[in-house]
Amino acid sequence: MTTAKDLFITAMDPKAERSVGQGDLSLALAGAELIDLIGTGAVGVDGDRIVVGDPAEPDDRLMAEAAAALSRQEPHERIEDWLWRRGRDLSAAYQAALEADGELSPKRGRRFSFGTERVEMVDTPAGSRAAARWQEGEPVLVALASAVGIDDGRADDEAGLGDEVTVVVAGVHDAVMELEAVRQRRSIENAAFANVWRGP
Image 1 (cartoon, rainbow, N blue to C red):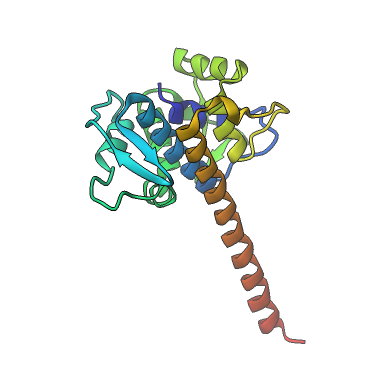
Image 2 (cartoon, rainbow, N blue to C red; image 1 turned 30 degrees about the vertical axis):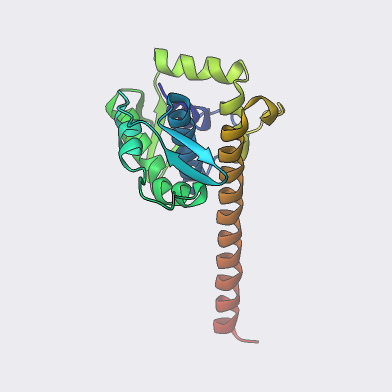
């Protein structure tokens, strides 16, 4: 399993106090992929830019797609740009992959809705590993979960992440905040438009 899949599973925990938006989760999943690629030495970080290292050939299909999507041209791609580019509809891609792997199944009932289809986690070793990583407070998973609003009272210890990972996590936080600002702006614009039609 990868950090991104563990994050997706963590976000689907029915005990979570709030649901995670697909847009927020997609940005965090792109950050998780980048962090795993840093861990393999496939990429490094120089300031706010991604420096591609040795070609990566991950066993995981989605991680292989992420590695193939890296920009190898200079000037190197900014982390923020990667999050938005790679993150587009990424939560749906992870949902489909987990369903194909038998980690998710259709759910009857009221919880948990991702998109138009209700799904739930299946009791599998991969799900147990993700849960164990979360319970142990693994710093990278906790930091990414915190960025999308998953917080069970534990503090994320960014001091233990390392410089490159800390920069990526900060980028995820910034991107999620930017997405929320866009949502609020659209909400205000829609409300103003509705008021125009209603008249004084």
